[in-house]
Length: 232
Image (cartoon, rainbow, N blue to C red):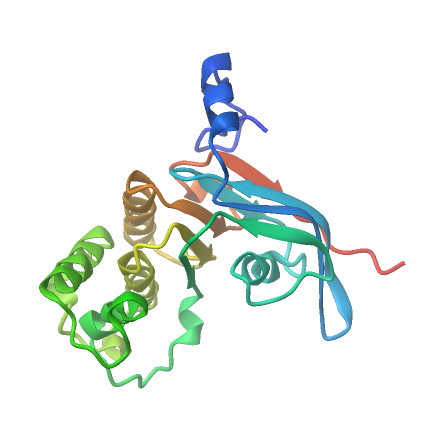
């Protein structure tokens, strides 16, 4: 599929650019993936390829398995059929929707973002100077540096989503999976999310993002469209 412009329309790509993209090994590839939840098939025969420095959008109606596909790509759910291949030593960051954060979570924005360094630093080890610089960079990327000492519970919905995204960005993962990060956000928060996605792709990450509206995204390189599963 050719790259898409921000309005979701196909954009022309030169033969040389397509050849370069084809030669670049994918960070993750799903081939013929089907998956079930609670005994019901929610994904059937899905293909997806995500490459470094690119944004792959997953679209489809509610119930079509968009979030389930993210969990399969993250390795948290085993496919019922088909397979998922990830490049060697790929780190995966899965950023959930803000509703996953309890209202009274007793931590600051900076502490939430710092959790993104635990995979590399270790759960009980203090963050290094480099880790702290990466956390600051992530907070800058989502526009929350000025709110780093605020409690997460005091944030607006859009700010909470950006704080979760900062945690994902701080992981410096090669594969960044975002579950509807634009849902119910105002224009300022959507712009901040797009800036953070650009920051991640510029750093070489493959970003896979679930969205209901392609127009919300400033950059899209490929689209996977899901449909409601047939139970016939």
